[in-house]
Image (tube, rainbow, N blue to C red):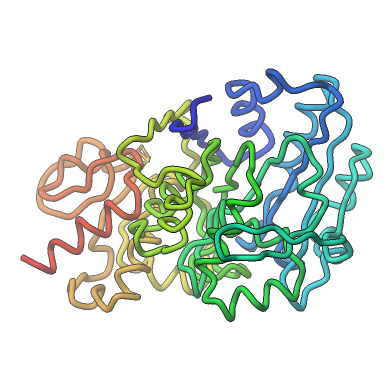
Amino acid sequence: MQRNQLMVVYGDDPYTMVEMLLQKIKPEEGLPRTAKIGLKPNLVLDKPASSGATTHPELVEGIIKYFQARGYHDLRIMESSWVGAQTERAFQVCGYQELAARYKVQLIDLKRDRTVTKRVGTFALEVCASPLEVDYLINLPVLKAHCQTELTCALKNLKGFIPDAEKRRYHRMGLHQPIAHLAAVLPTHLTIVDGICGDLTFEEGGNPVPMGRVIAGRDPVLIDAYAAALLGLAAEEVPYIGIAAGLGVGADDLAKAEIIEFNPEAKPAQPFRWSRRVQSLARYVDEREACSACYGSLIHALHRLEEEGELNRLGLGEKAIKIGQGFRGVTGEGLGVGVCTRGLASSVPGCPPTARAIKEFLGKRNRK
Ligand code: SF4
């Protein structure tokens, strides 16, 4: 897998989705059987993955089984939950204690880890020792929004590799600079993003938006540039992406990325239950058999427009935006999202379009 490639698998079963990705990537090539393999889920707090906050344990299970079946037996799940939460409680509630016991995998609470000082530029950063001791580090963030940095995905998930005192200090430093510099001292070999149902607004969950995909890549900066677009953001709106690119951690130019979708036909249907917040945005949507990957993009786009004070100015009525496979072949007046609605007078192309593309399309209507 080249560094400029991003691989996407659609579905709603993270176990089989990650297996499909690993079979394509073949991360074991050139990796000795004795290698220490670190797995870093996002267990920011003790809420299950269905809340939109944490990494699905089934995704991690798929990775463990893949490596164990190929003779790798030194796997370690590592995390330090956010300040105020107990990692051990998160391990238990999120299903990782049971997972680790079943597969005889180490579970490391990094709040108890020793730390070392790493220097990059003018920054001296305290980093937990265990992640630095592995031979192959797999970052497993959730694709979700963040109330301060807008996005939390590959780069910000590395904050779980620092002690609580550093987490507080990062906030005093404005987050972006230290997050970018941390990525420079903690290189990851592979990032696999849990894009099943990350949160709409906050990293602690509560408003999960099904996006029905798992994304893999070797370049965490490129992953975050793509993740930003999926949530309706320009990469410049998440300053740590550009800072990390400037430090040589990776590339932030999505135009040079090769995005490979393995099963575009397998986008799952969207579920029936939404949080109240998501329901409030969904009132503008006329949905007929929409894939969750498409519907989720639209919800993120509407949220961004609302945040920027643009949504009301659009003057959308209830069910004004049409989306879903039920609109295939439908022609006439109307505003649609996705290629299924291309027969309508106005339609956002893509299958699925990113939230960024939808936001820009709708935003242009305001500027006309
Ligand atoms: S455009 Fe149609 S087929 Fe493609 S993701 Fe959207 S709803 Fe699904």
